[in-house]
Image 1: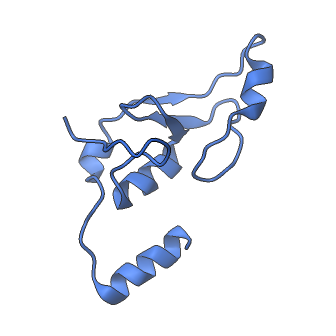
Image 2 (image 1 turned 135 degrees about the vertical axis):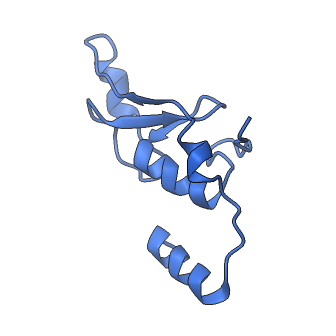
Amino acid sequence: MTYEELLELGEAVGTQSRGLSQELIALLPVSKHKCSFFSRKKSRDERCVICQMEYKRGDRRITLPCKHVYHADCGTRWLSINKACPICYKEVSGE
């Protein structure tokens, strides 16, 4: 299901928040993706596992406490629905 379909389903059956609040998500570090000369080859293979798009220079990325990184928009949407990392399933807490 897409994000929009999940929202529609939630409206139809009701929701119980399983995600983080926007205030807690805003506390997570956000950085810009940099592509240096030495990491250029590696960065071509780096993708956001949520949207499957490669990171491009200047993309805003959010880093979870488990050190996994996602596009900031993708990570924010994910964490508003589910407070566990999509790679390692470690719960992101507000601490």
